Length: 235
Ligand code: APR
Image 1 (cartoon, helix red, strand yellow):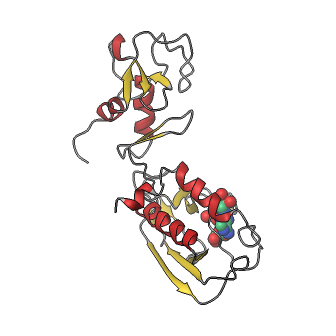
Image 2: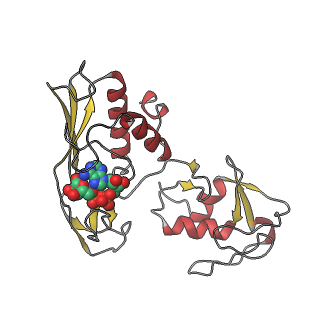
Image 3: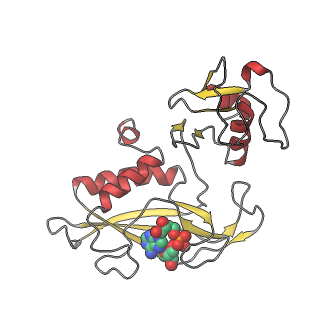
């Protein structure tokens, strides 16, 4: 993805707004009728005609400069997410560090799924140095508890979840680098908003059994990252 400036990326997802509503921009909290409250590096003057934009699909309106600033604060992957309703424009990617995702079928049934075997996913991410897309570029990050093992029933629905998780892995959305809410450690690899079942039968962490909504929860969390069945049908 070469050559598109942040302004061009943002513009692609916007419709023109002739007269801004008498509301505040929820990014900078300043009125949409006035200038963006965001003053940072790279914020230049804009003509009045392009100072406010409406996101094409969800219709939420912001200062153009505020959207550009938000885009520049992210990983600049050509996608944009509405900060109000989370609608995703383009293909959202994350900042998961390099590593490996493997899976295989094991000949045991998960509790609650007596009629099928089990898919075991094994994630392995080594520690490393943070890149520009991470909270503290140049600083090391740790990686605790790897390899991390996760379980899905080897049913039609479980296999569908697996296919979507493989897309999420490719888009670097399964893990992130930040502060662990479990251990409090910063600059470490953490799960990123897609809940995995990490205990086969026990439930010491709350990520085991019983967990009746597990597959539906994962599908919903993947959808929130912009990953749906459409993403696997086209491949
Ligand atoms: N299994 C599955 N999901 C978990 C687990 C777990 N053991 N622990 C936390 N989560 C979920 C949380 O509910 C939260 O939504 O991951 C999200 C991020 O939580 P953090 O505690 O910040 O994530 P992380 O530090 O990666 O996980 C904590 O998981 O595998 C273990 O060794 C790892 O002890 C560590 C624990």
